Length: 165
Length: 347
Image (cartoon, rainbow over all chains, first blue to last red; front, side, top):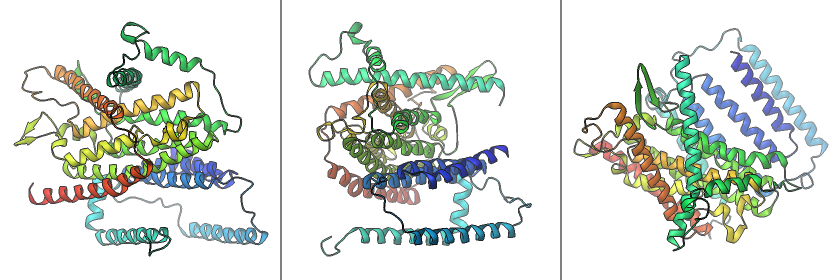
């Protein structure tokens, strides 16, 4: 349990650094560390497959692309667009509403009852694969169609002029 | 896990770490000798007999050279880059099964540091993390050439990771397990049930895709665009000097060693060699011979890496991207489909 609290502390610490860091590249690097702590959380919950996929997909691919984009557009303090006060106030109100919603949701959830997994070995690759391809086959395939449509959409957006492409 | 087990594991970790460093060190020597052979030169021959002490001299030079950190560089990240590169290079060896278990007295010593049941995915994760060292170092140098090298490294690694992953999926369909130990055990001996046991004979196309991607992931020629001298001065390590440069160069050789070990384990039978249980030798002797066989395979792969480097010129960047996205990925998907059909109808 103490491991959990230590890792949870690290997750929150790094995620605060993500939003407070001045330099966007530093912010992404803190985000990488945050995702790394998430990987440790998954391992603590015995969800090996989820842990390693989080590691490969988020840390190894998506955040590399984030970093890639940031390095390419090369943001720095001088060229950073100034936000108007109105946007700042709107952001503050929105964020506060979100925080209140989350706190209220957590209060409704009985914290004293810990979540009990029916099968602690569910996260191992073999069990997860069997469940995904038996009980949850339809949602699994539907989500793959969702990803495919997102991919097609991205390709369409990337080709500027559909006639010449 | 008792105290004895922990001590055994620690000794194993130290031995593997030392071996991978020594092999990386002598790979630099081998590379220079092989390059010399290909170009009809003699190569390093002054330090010690046949130049055998050349890596030590190079190392000493690297340590003693002046350390320069550019004034406008981000200092912490400038140091973190090469450290991360060498860290990710070294941790890949943890899941590789180096041989069958040794039995000494009442202790059974498994020659593998960690037998986790997602072994392949661990390797894959470490590989995908390897690009951060290059990217962070290239960005922190605050130099346009370094930045371009870093960006090239990122896009190249992402592109080739996809086809690497797809070629591994086809392999997993054949083996039915993610544990490297079990994959090595399945390839026991050389011949059984009327076909070769080694996976390269079951997944020839998959192996071809994997080795091409391995070249791209280790940034070796013909895929060494991130450090392309003719266009980018020195690529991501333009601003680096002394041992920090040494770390980047060293990480490349360790990566070569690790990817050789992974390819030998996944496709070339790992520590297995033909007739290993028909020779009538004791189990321990067979295990030791197996370790030697694995290292022979790894050295063959390292030689292959060097052979290609001094034979094939570098790709152009658009050719590199075309090869990755328009050739390798469709081939990898076709390979998965063929493997699926084969498993359904033939096996």
